Length: 237
Image 1: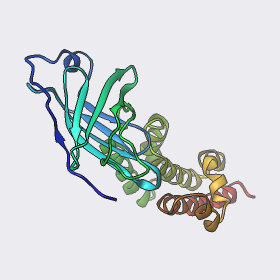
Image 2 (image 1 turned 30 degrees about the vertical axis):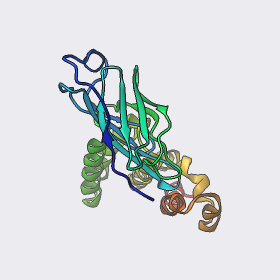
Image 3 (image 1 turned 90 degrees about the vertical axis):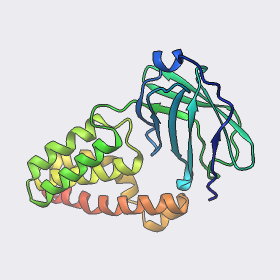
């Protein structure tokens, strides 16, 4: 996949950016598919941003620039083809749409546009990483009840902004923890969304998905097969 450099085109500085200051709030926004939008505090020249999206077979887009007072950012790639992005504040986050087709910024199966949600408290990327690391420390110490108390809130609170890979691994970790605690019902309920893929062979998953997506799902499915058996063992099946 070819990665191209990009540069800001022709945004005129203004003394005040009512659009940015009044509605577009700084922070991290997530699309629930592995993508993120970072909005930085407004400067004299606009509102800086970084945008990363993930498409099919893990193709990606990366862009950064400055949003003008009209809510638009104009970028150009190495081939000088301009790309216009429109940023619209919604109740749940920020919607990014293409005002002009963007060529050269992405892999073949990815696109820059999408809806980016404001994550709940502790559900930003750093927060999830910290919770999972703390969970692992506690689980490795066999402090299963404490480990559950760290990970279960992430599972419940962050579902809208977790990508499918994160969701799968958190389900596996939490399901296994329930099994260790002897709660077969909670173990099975947590892992149930993974049961269909766990019931497929690796070869079947490879038939259905592009290579990179298949590799990720196979690892999750293999863990789920083992953990579902532990659920059943705790239930006496």
